Image 1 (cartoon, rainbow, N blue to C red):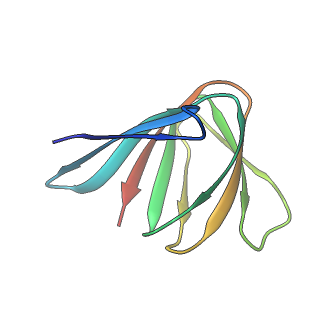
Image 2 (image 1 turned 90 degrees about the horizontal axis):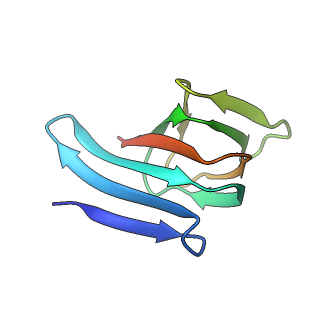
Length: 93
């Protein structure tokens, strides 16, 4: 029913689920710097906190606060800076 995932020595945790609207994960990130790769197109929404993102092939970091979203294409990598515990919702499409 639910898949629990843990990354970066437990500093990033997520729970995956699927419903009639699609496939999702909801998770939390502890303070730190991370790099993620994508296996499908993703839309990430910051639920609480803030993520600072450096997208692949870009040079400027972008800030995403509570309630904002961003998209990452399948096969892309992106770097994340987290200054405070932050929660997110990720939709796969």
